Image 1: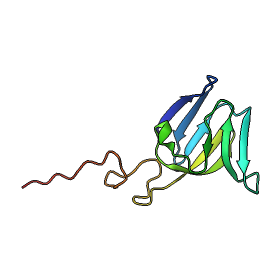
Image 2 (image 1 turned 90 degrees about the vertical axis):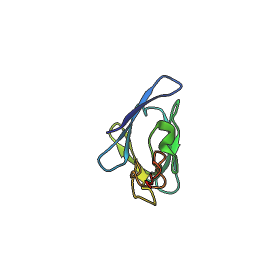
Image 3 (image 1 turned 120 degrees about the vertical axis):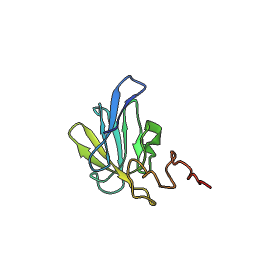
Image 4 (image 1 turned 90 degrees about the horizontal axis):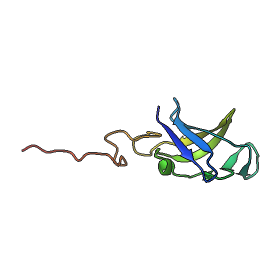
Length: 113
């Protein structure tokens, strides 16, 4: 699994790790944290731990070296599971299939004559 460490402006370390469902487990110090929701406190739309990183619905995880956009939050014991929207082309969550037109590493087809 792909695991990324992020150090916020207060020196707290947060980790992002792709799980078996293709979502991202976000762990770190959430002792002092801001949250936003529309109607239901269980339906979070934003989580902002003191010192960052601020993550909301629609956040592009590319800024942390991962792929996908956040479409939901599932509270976990040590943080949150970030629910990732699958690609509309190849249905990949945290990575695109090699042949996907959205894959930034897609290699052009070689034609042999």
